[in-house]
Image (tube, rainbow, N blue to C red; front, side, top):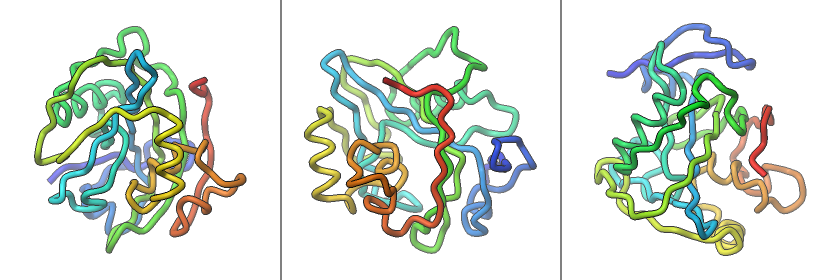
Length: 194
């Protein structure tokens, strides 16, 4: 069992809870998503393993997870990126800094609810990841235009949080245009990636 951090809508910790209990109960919790780009400007995607407890087989950003209680956000991202993709990335000089994009979303995924205060972190990497088959069963580099077109054409092949991160693919300004099952979305970005 793994505990994760419960938060209020300002990302202030309110407690902790066992991960699966939190998702069954639909409680707001802290999460992070890592978006990785190579020197050609392509984004690294992973296809979630079929054994994952939700969203199996869907394409998503390079890594996403939850910090453990008392774990720094950047340390958690470094740990999970290494565990999932065997990429050793150092956010040196940015620890304790403000993530580059933040949002709150709530969406049903099967019999669970993802209700997350999601911190999106950006990183640069050239190379080939070595995926952990328990976490992912595929990966690919994709350029922005191809990704946006594919999300518009095949939104159900991507995780809900990734579709929300890819706001450039929205039709109009309504996040529900890409995530029809969305219950709640609030933009909280303090520093945006340009």
